[in-house]
Amino acid sequence: MSKHQSSSRPGVVRGQRPLSTHRRVAHGVYVERPAPGVRDDPRCRLIDDLRALLLVLPPGATFTHVTAAAVLGWSLPKLPDVPPVFASVGDRDPRPRRPGLICSRLRRSHLHEEVLPASVRGAPVPVDHPAEILLRAARDLGTIDLVILADSARRLGHVTEESIRPVLESGRPGVRQLKRAWELSDPRAESPGETLLRLLHHVAGASVTPQVELYDEGRFLGRVDLLLDGAPSAHEYDGGGHRGEAQHRRDLRRERLLQRKVDRRGYVLDDLLNRPHAVLDDIDRALQRKPDPAREAAWRRLVDNSMYGAGYGRVIQRWRRLGGFDDWSGTRSTSVAKRGLVTKPDQ
Image (cartoon, rainbow, N blue to C red; front, side, top):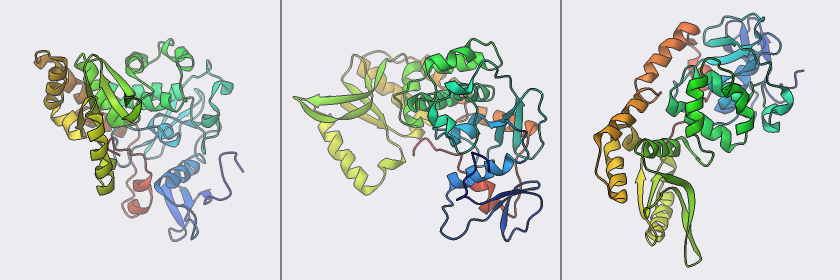
C-alpha cells in the first residue's frame, strides 16, 4: 500500500468496473463507492480521484497547479466547477493522456525533499514543492489569481522568501508573472475577498495595514481587515459568512464599537468587480484627495486579465487545448462535478 493511500478510504482500481459499485474517474480508472458511514464530502472525493489517477501516472509524479493548491488547503481564485487535474512528471517520463488530466514535464533538480514543510510532506497524495505549484499556476493565471494563491500559501507557512528564491531566480516560464504576484502578496490576508480588496487599494495608491487590532482605552474593539494608513478609516470584505441572522447581529454590535475609533466600510465581491468606483470614492474621501479615473481603469485591466474577468475564457480555452475536460454526463452528479476545487471569495 502506498504511503499516500489509507485503508479507511475506498479502493482505487485500474480496469473496467460496474458503475453500481464503482465511480468512474477517467478512462479505465475507478474508485469504489464508499461504504455507508464512510466520509464522502467533496474534499474526500477529490483525494480519492487523485489517488485513482496515480494509477496511470509514472512513479514519482506529483500533483501541481490549482490541484495541489486544493489538496494543501490553499484559498483558490474563481475556477470552473470541474477544472482539469494538473500533474507534473519527470522530464524523461511519459505523459498519460486522459480527458481532464494535464501533465507537465518539469525540471526540479534545484529543489530537495528535505526543504518541504512537514505539512506538505504529509499530504494525502503527492504534491509538488509549493514554490513549483505557484510557478506552474503562473503560466496560466493572472496577477490577482496568483496573489490569492500566494497569500494563502504564505499564511499557511508552505512558502517562504527563502524557499521561493531559487524559483524566482531560475528564469523559467512564468517567473516574471510570479515575481509580480509574490511582491504583492501578504500572509496576513485571511480570504480571497480580502486579497481582492487589498489589491484594489494598492492599485489606488492607498497604503493599508491588514489585520489591525483596535482598542479604546485598553478595551479591545475588534480586528479590521484593512486600516488605511494616515486616515481613521477601516475597509473590510463582507463575505457570505456575514449574511446569517446571528452573524449579522454580531456584526452590527462590532460595527458600533468600531465607530468609536474608525469609519468602517464593508464591501462585497460585486463592489470590487463591478462597482470599483464606489470603493475608490470611499478611499479618496478618507484620504482627502481628488478622484482619478486612471485608478479605476488600472483596476479594471487587472480584473480583466484574471479569472474574474475576460481572462477566464482565455484560460479555459487553453486548458481545453492542453487536456480537455471530463464529460461523463451520466455520472457527473456523483463524480468529477463534486471534486470540490472551487473556493468562492465570499465564503
